[in-house]
Every structure is written in C-alpha cells, then in structure tokens.
Image (tube, rainbow, N blue to C red; front, side):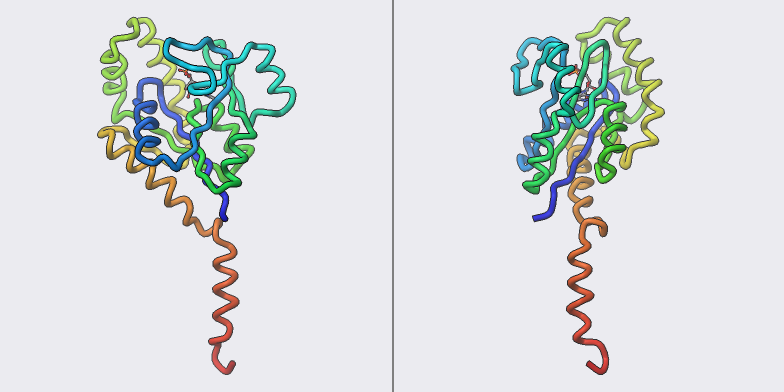
Length: 209
Ligand code: 5GP
C-alpha cells in the first residue's frame, strides 16, 4: 500500500478556511485531520482531544524536548504544534492527512518533509477578506484591523505554497482542494515501482526477443 499524502492547509484568518475544512471532511470522511496540541485555553464548545489537545506550558515544552512534534510555532502568545505519532501512523496506513496550521509551521513541515503538499486558501480580494471579518460580527474593529495587518505580513508566505486556491464559492473551493490532494497521488515520483515493472515487462516484446 502506498503512503498517504500529507497536505498542509493554511490561509489568512477570516479566509473561510475553517468552513472549507469542515465541508471537506464531511464530504470525504477518508481524510484524517491531525489534532494539534496547544497551550491556548479552550473556547466555549471546544473539547480536549477533539479540536485540540489542551496542554500547560510545561507539558507542551516536554513535547518539544522529546521531539514528539513534527513542527510547532508560537502564535499570539501561545504554542501550537502537530503531534508526530498520529500523523506518521495514518500516513503509513495509506490515509491522507490534513494539517490545518499557520504559515511558520507550514514552512517547517516543508523543510522536514519535502513531499508534503502545501495549499493556501485565500479570499478573492483584500476587500473581501475585510468584508468577511466584519461580517462575522464577533470581533471589534481593533481586532479586525490587527488581523488585516497580520494578513499583510503573512502574504509573503503565499509564494512558498504549491497551490493557491481562491475561496469564492465554498463548494468549488472544497472540490478544488480535494482534487489537488487526489492528483498528488499520481505524481510520477510516487510511482517508481509501476514504472520499473512496466519497463521490465515490456522487454519481452522487444524486437528480436
Ligand atoms: P486558533 O487559536 O484560532 O484555533 O488557531 C490559531 C492559528 O493556529 C490558526 O492559524 C491555526 O491554523 C494555527 N494552528 C493550529 N494548530 C496548529 C499547529 O499544530 N501548528 C501550527 N504551526 N499552527 C497551528
């Protein structure tokens, strides 16, 4: 069985990436979503082991020390990291794994695991990003402005991703992300055995043999 694809999905806060991920996993239950560890406090409705593994700072630093994380990053004063065991196990079992992580973490994954597939989800325009942030109605204008200025700093990372997906219509975006991950399975680099076998088998048809 061939190894699964490791897909890293990132995007600006407010790009609708959470909604895209939710729909993707509902429509394609075969994907394994990695659950991160974090030191941030659970929000209302979040459960330990479902949205995140909630850790104390000491516990998180122990995970770092024991090399139990594929990557970790600090984001707004908190640690976030990807536990290694789960991801490795799922990939070995041939399942495609999705990491929904911010950009510094994505860069580290690419460095450590060059075969990882990096997908960036973006709203169609900066004006639309602002509109979506305002439309949520949950954040103050101060928070919205800080998210927009962060997005401006983060935009430089877009260049490092393998695919940029514009999230205009949700359904299209979900389908595109799924297609990208599935296409990755057919990369030539992932099929050395198929090529070798075909070359070997075709030899019998060579002229004169
Ligand atoms: P939130 O606190 O809103 O749940 O997440 C804040 C940010 O942390 C989001 O951009 C999310 O994608 C990112 N994040 C979640 N888990 C991880 C992780 O394991 N590693 C990294 N580097 N970022 C993460």
